[in-house]
Image (tube, rainbow, N blue to C red; front, side):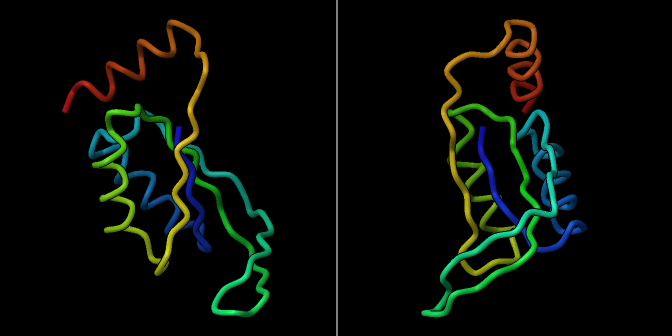
Length: 102
């Protein structure tokens, strides 16, 4: 699973749709708004953002990373890969089927 954040719900939906269409994600979930507090260019910042949880596989990471950097509006987008230690067998099978149709 991977996660990124965007400051606009429409941009989050557009990114999520593109990742599923490109078969880099079997599913994306958009959560938010959330409040992010961070340092950017030496200043403390706060903003409302939307998390996009990307259901993917490790072997899709390189292409997923390229796509996110291509499509994401931020100069330095957050993109984290979170290793999942277990998933239900039917869900894992479904996810693999979605990503194998490339």
